[in-house]
Length: 280
Image (cartoon, rainbow, N blue to C red; front, top):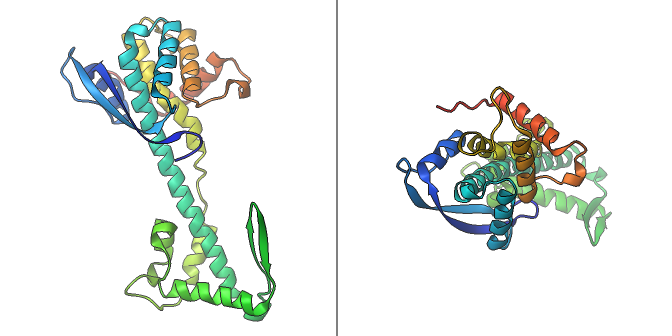
């Protein structure tokens, strides 16, 4: 898992109007099955834990709702918030895993191309580094042995697919059984080396507003914290969403120059410009 969130599994058991909650979660493809106006027990398994102490988070969430006069909606809003948060961060993890796999393949492609294209008598230094120090191989025989051992292992298909990931597997598909002992395809390596890799971090910024989308729509349609007719957002809604993102550790107020409501308005307008929800 990424960053400082506690990895593991937590289950929040809540009593919600499943049909109502489902109406808002279905905007992101999620939701629970339930009959209209009936309260149901739902279990929400989370892959992302916001706090190590679940009771601490519930207490702070209740305090936030009390501040904005929303405590009567505690169960529904907690359910929507947790499900939206978990879905967004599961998708961000997917983007990170894909980036990590592509980056590993590109580094391996760069290394193999260098070793294959460098005459053995000119390969004179191999360096290994860690946070505690490093080791430099300047002996020509040792350097060549490291190079030859690596290339031989790759060509014989003796490399850990489980650790290398799907992109390395695709790049070196000609070396997988039953194709062992085939020469490495340098054209494939060149394509991987020069391929642009999408920056996964951009999904963090957009993700924080996607988390807020079903919460905002619930506020607008189910609570008194709503915007006036003809206005997209009220200041109170935007300030609440900002405080919610702080509670979820998605933003650091000290690093944001604009007013909370202005920051949220800009982000939500940008999001809704791409994804305009329609409620029936």
